[in-house]
Amino acid sequence: MELCSLRFAFVLALLLYPCFAAARGGDRRPISLLGQMDDEGWMLSRHLLEDQPLITDEMVSGYMSNSELEMAIKEFGRRCSNISRVYSIGKSVNSVPLWVMEISDKPGKDEAAPSFKFIGNVHGDEPVGRELLIRLANWLCDNYMKDSLAMMIVKHVHLHILPTMNPDGFALRRRGNANNVDLNRDFPDQFYPLNDRLESRQPETRAIMNWVKERRFTASASLHGGALVANYPWDGSQDTRKEYVACPDDKTFRYMANVYSHSHYNMSLSKEFEGGITNGAFWYPIYGGMQDWNYIHGGCFELTLEISDVKWPKSIELPILWEYNRLSMLNLVASLLKAGIHGRILSSQGGHPLPAAVKVEGIDYTVFATRTLGDYHRLLAPRESYEVVASMPGFQSKRTRVVVEDEVTSLDFILIPEGEDSVKQDEILNNYICSCGGKDKLELVEFLRGTHFEIYLFIFIVVVFLFYLLKRKKMF
Image 1 (cartoon, rainbow, N blue to C red):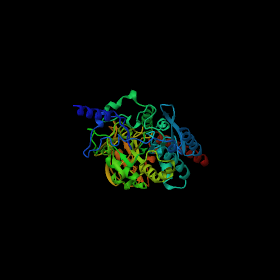
Image 2: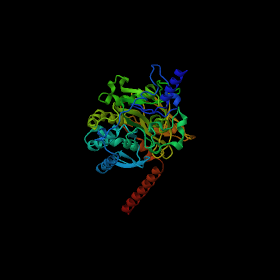
Image 3: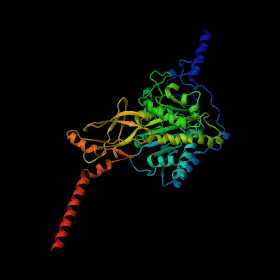
Image 4: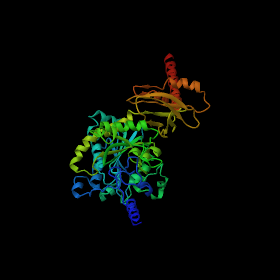
């Protein structure tokens, strides 16, 4: 009896002990989930009971403080004002601004181009990402007129960089924010509805959620530390077991993860993760993660990138880590222009933009065109054939088959309101919609359509009339 009591006390102590992880970190799931084992005898939430080393002053030395990082961001904005702008998406618990650097040849302007975001320092004790992201911004500023990859990104993508999501945690040298909440367990979760309590959401989490809903990002990545692997959805599983749980766009996510891993110096050589990539739930399930929320609620394809085996390496290693990850970060952003289809959806009456739905047959996922420009960006794994459908209530759906190659694939749709003579409209539109060297003839259709046509017809008639009067005057 006494032995049973001791065993019970030991198990209880394990369940109540503060939980940490080496790579993806702490856990906010129900206590009943923490003690489960997978088929190989590993704890379901791997590394949760490992002790974390004390972060000393010597380790912090060489890293930018929050105030120094803010000065570096603003200095970047001044130095590179022609291709960038700096803005804040909110504040942390301790009122530290969450500064973002946008990099584009048209910063702050609405255009039919895909958007990508990088987020660093989600966990306060994983600071490598914040250092690498400020280096990435400055590298693009210095090289966009010299390097073809940098120029492609600046001209054709809106890149948004948030170096630190958790400045309070960094200052406190701990994983959670100032309220000691793990921000990567604070998002609404499809498998764990108890995490949907809006009143308990942290200000940093709310800032990200509002940002994603406002900006309509095509893809993104968050930078973490403690392992070396590119992680993709789903992060959780229905029964909380460690198993491969594929999302509808599993093939596209594996493509994106491989872009990063195989561009990295040694990530793809991992002995623990085949090819240097992993499905999140197959590694170990987590709940309330930012990655899955982005895909489900934001229409944004996000990866979780573990970029350093050591969470807080000495600062002298930062130049090496930068060189190891630089090409991976650039290629991942550039993959937006190579993986998938991009285009606009307009109405046949006046060429107005339509916020229509775009679906791919066989993939249970929908992206939507924007209301302002009607542009959409649907990521898909290359070297495949897809049947694409554009639809919107009150309009006739359009479908077409397209082969996605390793280059920009343009596909525009003009939807006809229900009730029009669709045969006649199709004959007209098919003469103008094509992809020729990446430039569509859709602009000509817009130019000749609607009010533009009426204006130019009126001008033409006036010119003809004036010409007639001038000729008549010469005759007399």
